Image (cartoon, rainbow, N blue to C red; front, side, top):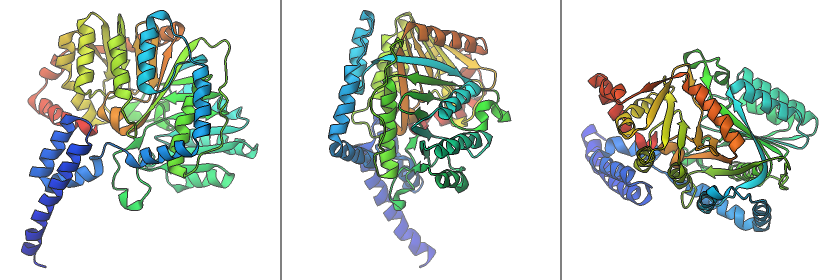
Length: 476
């Protein structure tokens, strides 16, 4: 076939495929902005847009959703038992939070439970010490789930501990994201499997022909020991979280240790992901532990592209709208959708002390650049924006007034809101909120406050780069 003949066939085929894909984008894409962007590009420049759409275009994980429904139908009795056990331990939040509790629980389908303790773990060293100590004391099960699991000194230390517990008869289950842990290699998993661990990679699709679709990522980071204690937050397994990755050190992050009934919800999310990756439901302890001295009301909210309807965006919007005096948010990636941006501006307009703590240096250049374009709208409404100056700031922490806090894996971008599997933990407890406030106050002392001129005063090549980066908002 001559080149001219190839072009004569390829051009109309591309346009037909582009038109079909544009219809699919209109039907499937969750936001109108994303649907319009995909449809126009697929119709007018299909030669460029088609490969990107086939890789990044889908924002609904239908396969996971169908499999999850199958799991629920097959194990309905077990599912109802766990649900009823947690509902029986539903917390009664203070009267001024009763309405917020009802809204968040109705949207999320999860409940605030009583009898929990929640402890902040600031930075990698404290987090690893707490997790490794819990693993050493494991008697029955250790569940490990990470977006990034590295074959480095930190990963080796974790593997050594897991192998030691396997030799004591403890069951070990390890789940890692296939894309986030791309460089892990086979030797790490092989060592754990040889010692008796169950190890699986979380992949976007089960059929090999569909593995081009990499848009969905399991961004959760959790360790659960004996169904009694759980860890969740921003810290993966890797040397950079100890500040050993020079370009981004020191690394600033926050993790959370919880004990009590809320651990069961962490475990439920792990079991669902495990069922997708491994094809079977693990036999785990499902009796909610009670800490009689636990004062915190805790709601754990797993979220992801299989949610129908979406739970995370409306819950976070409600948290913003519920703020009365203070709303401090630390996030490494700030690429908000219009409703989130307007909610933040509205909170500032009504007199709430709204502060954003963002990184001063990037680990992902497009998201970092795009964040500058939101400065005029934020600071113009009275939102105070701070850039962290000592290393890279990766924590995902919210403080609402003096009694609510949210710690987890969620960034303020479309990827976290709609494309990734994430985990949030909302804690209602004044003592815990006070500790979060003290932590963020210390972080603010390591920041510089920035205004609109941080964007408008830059050179036009920088502003153009930032505006172009913002066009990638649907996949950032």
